[in-house]
Image 1 (tube, rainbow, N blue to C red):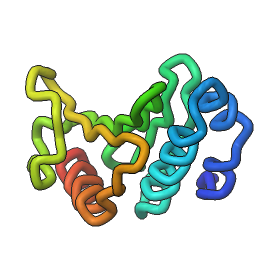
Image 2 (tube, rainbow, N blue to C red):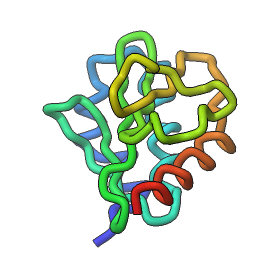
Image 3 (cartoon, helix red, strand yellow):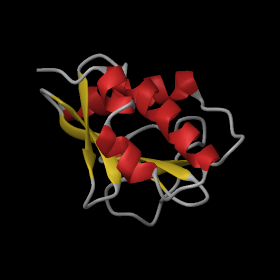
Image 4 (cartoon, rainbow, N blue to C red):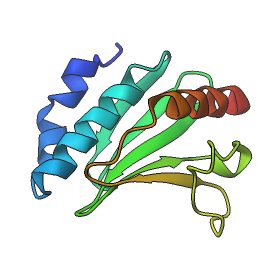
Length: 126
């Protein structure tokens, strides 16, 4: 059964994951998780051991994860090195496989660019 966006964003597990974090990071995490969870075919799951919300696609497998930190939120793309750089948004050239987008409190979420990156990540992995 697909996890609804509302269930994921307002789940006890997401609240537990973000509880020790500053409120602006909690809000940013919830907004980013909502955006990704709304993408067709993706299902999210809070992974307490990884301190992340991981997103899978039925055909593509693990696509990305949201990692909230004390001062930022990172959106990690599993096969990010294969993706276009999202208008220069992706970082992590030293990583073997993945790339990430780093957002801080007050940053605008690049909704369109993330949508394109998600679609590209799914297409490349499916």
